[in-house]
Length: 499
Image 1: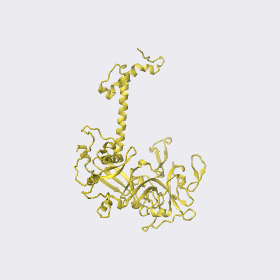
Image 2 (image 1 turned 60 degrees about the horizontal axis):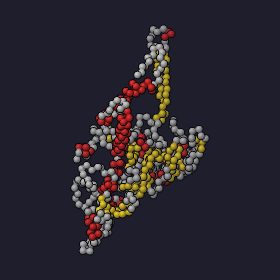
Image 3 (image 1 turned 180 degrees about the horizontal axis):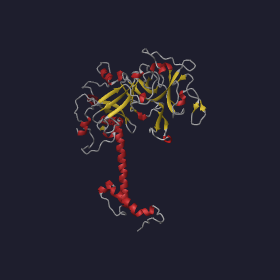
Image 4 (image 1 turned 135 degrees about the vertical axis):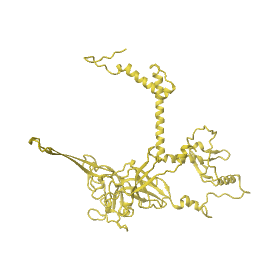
C-alpha cells in the first residue's frame, strides 16, 4: 500500500452541525434606500449671507430576487435515492440537497413560522405520477396574458377547474411569458400526498460540515475545510416494489391548501366562484425517478431464501458420481467454485453462455488478487477495455467474464463520482492542450528555427520559451516597420531608420 492509499484510508474527522433554518438577511422583494445629508453653518458669528442649513437626499430602489419559477441545476448538490437507481428504499424518505444554505427559506409557504416554500411530493406508480407540462408563468393564473413581448393577451392554459398559487403577483424583472414546468395534481391526491401544515417546519434544515484538515469530497477545492448545504426531505415513504417519482415543487403562499392539524384534515380547495376545485397546478423545479424493490427481492431476502428446502434453486445438477458425465462434473466443479452461468451477448451480436463469479465465493481468497492478463509483465500497459480481460477456455469453449464485469463496474463507479469525473476531464483537456502545444512548437521549430538563426535544444523545445522569445524579438526589430505604418515626418517626430 502506497502513502497516498494510506492517506485515503484514514477516516474523515470533523463536525456536522444541523441548523433548523438559515434564513437570508433580506427577504425576497423590492427595497428602497434613502441617504440624507444635512449641512449647516454652526458658526454663531457668521454673517447673514453665510448662514445656511440644507438637507440633501438621495434615494435608490433595488430588488432582492431569488429563485421562484425555476431552480438552476447548479444549485442542486445531490438527491437520494439517486436518479434511476433501485434498492431497499421502502424505509427511506427521499431528500434533496442544495449547495446554497438559504435557498429553502428565501420564500415562505405563508405560515407564521415562515417555513420553507419548497416541498417534495412522492408519487408511486399506483398514483400515478402527473405529467410534466412546459408552460409559462402566466399559465399559473386564469386571466389571459401576453405570451411574448409586445404581444396581445392570449388565453391561459390553466384549466377552469384548477387552482394555482393564490394571489400570485409578479415581482420586478418577472414577465408572464417566463418559462416554467408545471404538474396538475388532482385535489384528492394532493390532499393525500402534500405535507401537513404542521409538518412544514420539520421538512427542511441546513447543515454545516467543518474540519481542521481539507475535506475529501467530490467537487471540492483542494484546501476546502467547510461545506454549507440545505436539505429538503419528503414526507412519504415509497411503496415497496414500485417505480417512484419525486417532484420538488413550490408551495409559495399555499399554506391554506395544505392538510391542517395533527389529524391532517384536508383543506377545502375551491375555485374563485366557491365551487370545489378538481386539481392543483404546481411549479415543479426538479424531478427524478427510482425503483423501490420488494424486500423479498433484496440481497438479504434472497440470501434468507437459500436456507429453505423448497426455496431458491439456481441450478439442478445430478449428484451421482457414478453416472455423472464429464460435462456434469465440470459444471458441478464450477458451481462449487462460486461460478454462475449467465447469458452473454457479444459485440458481434452472438448469444452464448459464459461463467461469472462475483466477489462472494465459497472459499477463502488471498487479500491480493492478480488479474490474469495474457503475457502480462510488470510493464504491461493498463487495461483499456473490459474485453481485454475476458478469459477464454479453448477446451470447453466457455468464457469467464468475471474480471471484465468487475472492471466495468469499477469504471462506472468511478465515473459516478463527481470529483473523479471532473479530475478526469481536466486531465484529458490538459493532455490535449499539451499535444497541441508540442505540435505547434515542432512546426515553428521546423519552419523558422533556421530563419531566426537558432537551433533549439531538447529542453528548450519542451519549454518553448526560447523560440517564443526569438520570434517576438524578430517581429519587434525586423518586421515592425513592415507591419506598422510609419507616421510622416514632422516637427518633433522621430523617423525610424531601416536596414
